[in-house]
Image 1 (cartoon, helix red, strand yellow):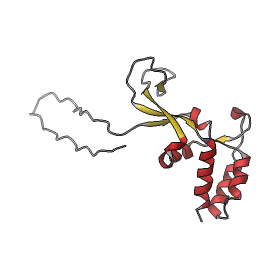
Image 2: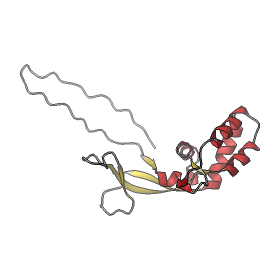
Image 3: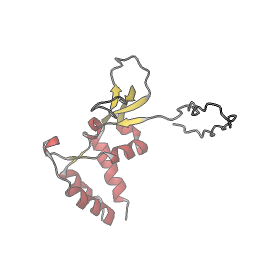
Image 4: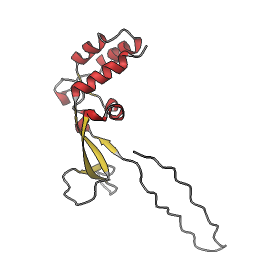
Length: 158
């Protein structure tokens, strides 16, 4: 992944009385967009057994505060009371250990039309539209490796 700095365009002052169009500048996308969907984070369900394992991983205040806070998260009906989905840790885990995930190149867009789906991300996972892939979709997660990574990293904290 590479991020490139883009110099701002030079603005030209039009002659007095000339019609002014807002400038448009094509910006090349030189970084990879990675999507972690709710389908992915539903694979990262933090169950009471994970908290028990983490509590034995170390004695640090951060680790135990994490376990205390996570223990208060209700295990709702969405996952039949089996755990709470960890969204942000999936994004961080991708940056640290991308080998814990399987991926797929997909075309994705955002619905900008009127109606209730405005703002929804549309992912062409099966290439039905013929649009070129413009994102990397995280599909599956090695949950054992994921929870081991979290426990190991949190155990290092004071």
